[in-house]
Figure 1 (spheres, rainbow, N blue to C red):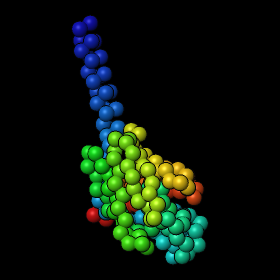
Figure 2 (cartoon, helix red, strand yellow; figure 1 turned 90 degrees about the horizontal axis):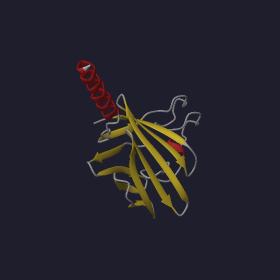
Figure 3 (cartoon, one colour; figure 1 turned 180 degrees about the vertical axis):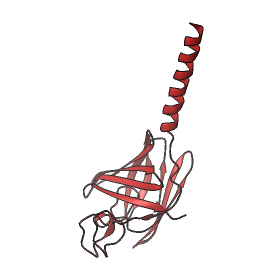
Figure 4 (cartoon, rainbow, N blue to C red; figure 1 turned 90 degrees about the vertical axis):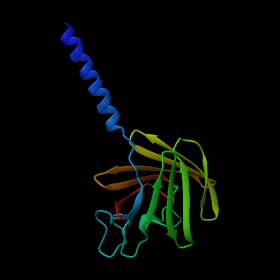
Length: 168
């Protein structure tokens, strides 16, 4: 009977450790370059949606990235600490930096000429960034698997997904 209890405690401890490991938060730090979408035609830029014509904008249109923007054609540099996620990229308007608090509290970010309110919080091992502007609400869900960063977007100009490969 005593062995059964010890065995049961060991199994329970292992189950808790497995769940905790599976829920580990990824570190998105690094420089990331968008990959061509599956089904995108030859000549379409990296990050262009599948079915887009050659020369179509990557990411689905104008605006700038970070908080649900659609212009995510170029590389981005991400710096992550225990408390913040900072995204740096160069846009047609010059350098752009957005910093999000990872505890779910509000951050004010610049998106072009607009100021937005954003929250970032963990949902298991995914990071969900919600951005609110006078034009509505956008959500990005960041996940990392096998060295590929996937950002799924909803709201704004419609749903979309961009995948990135780490370049540094």
